[in-house]
Image (cartoon, rainbow, N blue to C red):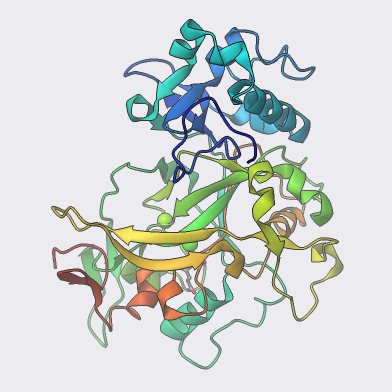
Length: 391
Ligand SMILES: O=C(O)/C=C/C(=O)CC(=O)CC(=O)O
Ligand SMILES: [Ca+2]
Ligand SMILES: [Mg+2]
């Protein structure tokens, strides 16, 4: 048996001592936001651990990064600080270490039951970019939006395509999303529709949280890009397909995307994901040298989306996919983003794009699952073309 915590962790928990994802939370209503890590059914308050002097390594000893209301300072400190923090937290939580285990008053202060914690957006997001790196999703969208002749654009196999998203409307999981109003695609010769979107969709994505950035004008080498990635969150790029289909030519996504993007409160670090690393798919044609990596890896992370209709108890699984289906790696995305000299900053959010697999059961959005509303998706007793039962 590997490393274990003195905090009881259910075997099905996503938060064993090997994970330790970071978030920002309030332990009680009105209290100051602070960084924490998840362990079992608890959040470990890192500000309490820092105040108790337990971050005693050379980098963190004198840092106030755990007395901040977001993670940006820790993100900017880079891998040596992250490694030191992980080693300290794993030691403090391990079953063989008495410091916290046998200190009832510190435990009382530092271990907050997760159901009492209010989770917040973990970092201030200066910029948000959304990539388009699943070949299956690209092909399906191409056929649906542009017809069967050139489903995958010719540039797609040469560079990780992306658009600049809207950082201000990124919210933490659980935040209500207001159905956007806008102009929808006209049918035949009618004028454009205006009103609440009739084609509201989700997009199953993950996203990179950027650590140290780069200076304006200086790009990041693809082989060093992993040191600029703190970790990954789950992401839902809410999309209004009717608005999107009408507005996106020729400049790309705008109001069909910018009304809301949800991320998980927990950032799983690349260190914690290392045991799930696997070979990235073979790339053909070979990428240009600035995108060619010495080690080309992705992570085997199974993902699923469930929809719970309003007023029902039961959520229904509508898709099962995996991060490993992506064609372009996270490090290629990051290196490509900076190749023109564009600067990234700590806390920037880089969405992977919708994570669709090859089989219809693994498509990452309703646009694909219902083929733009042509088919009905069954959710137990009800059906959906897009989100909502109101039409
Ligand atoms: O193919 C298109 O015109 C549009 C595709 C998307 O809406 C996808 C997008 O946001 C990027 C992605 O999630 O892969
Ligand atoms: Ca997207
Ligand atoms: Mg969106």
